[in-house]
Image 1 (cartoon, rainbow, N blue to C red):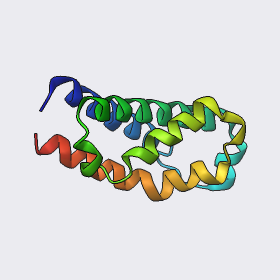
Image 2: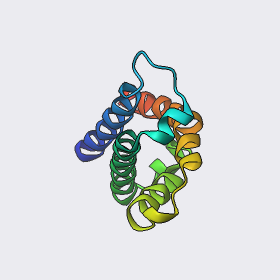
Image 3: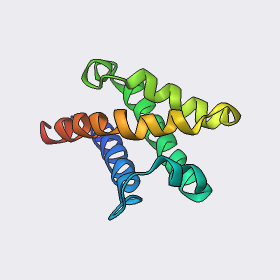
Image 4: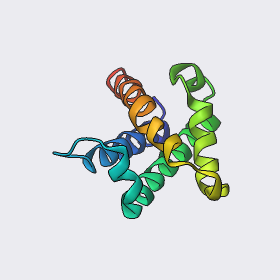
Length: 115
């Protein structure tokens, strides 16, 4: 695997682990998330990192679009967080955390293991 892609996959892995770490020993609770502006901004920052790393990976090797199910959507979320920050809903980010991030975590871990 290309050394830069390898690094970016690890950047994604670490950003996901950091998000998971925000909930260590705590139940994921949407209403607590919604009230905690620092947590929301920290998660959004990690989603930016994930999206930027994904963008760099796809620019270097388009075959990863087939290896990571929602690669383009991940980049789209990054663009929304950065450029359309005022349109982000807590519900949308929460659904990413609960539904999509676990799947991405699994895909990234598999890609790293298979290298």
